[in-house]
Length: 457
Image (cartoon, rainbow, N blue to C red; front, side, top):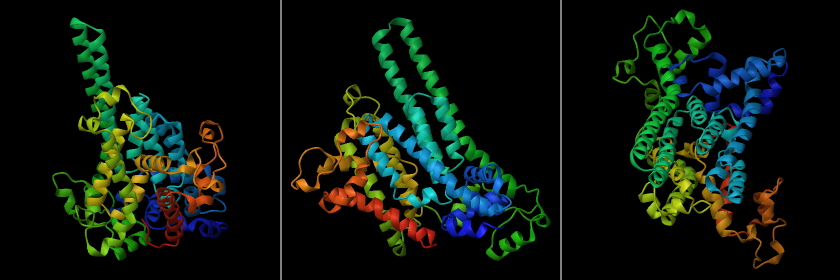
């Protein structure tokens, strides 16, 4: 087509590594066994964007060209939606507008930036996850379940969000029981208790089922495709069949024997693919040759560890009581040490432990940046705590005062404090230099290396 070369020249760098798999699925469907490592929502969104919104360009662009253009335009829009959802969630949880805004500016400079723009599902997943958690914080449980369920159709780690659905309604139920205990008496109190507990159980069971449904449905689809296939080799395009034979990709064949994983008590295709194709498993990445990848993941891991340590130091009683009761709940402090942050710190810590022990560790940067707000919250907290230039008080060098008023955070058009700090980078505190250096260096290096088909996180 006429414009394919132009689109490829402009946006071809966004189609490398895993993006190639998503683009293949969006164009050809789920043909090879390893394709099922990539969940279907993002390819569906890409194909819909290419076929509907970009249909007028079909005379100038092939399907592949329109899909690549859909990646560039669609992920930019999805990332913008994720920023809005991130800010709304931060405001609801932190209850500190300034910290929420600074966290959002840092999120806009995420170290996983290239994966938010390239043909990956990170932006889509982040928008749905942060949006769903915001709805859950506001008490819109059914809408939150729907958003988090759709997020699970984008990435498998959406299943971890079930923890929020179990925890936040439990916290609400406990607070209701406290109110009933103080305001009602006799049989009425018992009936209220029963109703609260029954509603909590029903909400938990329903929400868990809804969030897990896309994962279960996709695994069933994979099982039916390969364990009880209705496709023969003659029905597959010769070019695609030849490609599969050259690279050792399994295709469904009704005349051939079923794969061995079909015989397992729990035949999960996703687990099989991670084990066989990507060699993902417990401690499998702990090898000397993987030390560079551990170094790449270290900054994100350090932020998550610092967040957990600082939060426990500030709220030991609350943490030991799992954030369900305590004096801190009665008089919550706005900011990172707010009791509402507890479950997010736990979630971040779980992701860190699982990502370090059971995944390709270099993925930790984009894995956590698209799933948890905690790395950005702790970064913003540390900046406000250690950077004098973000405050109105005088510093030792009056020539490096920022030309911004902190009250701008509360206006409709706030100045970006991150951009305001950059011209004075050398005068910033070591903490600021470390955080901004990490964010900006990964932002630039990721874009340069990934788009040139060089290894990155």
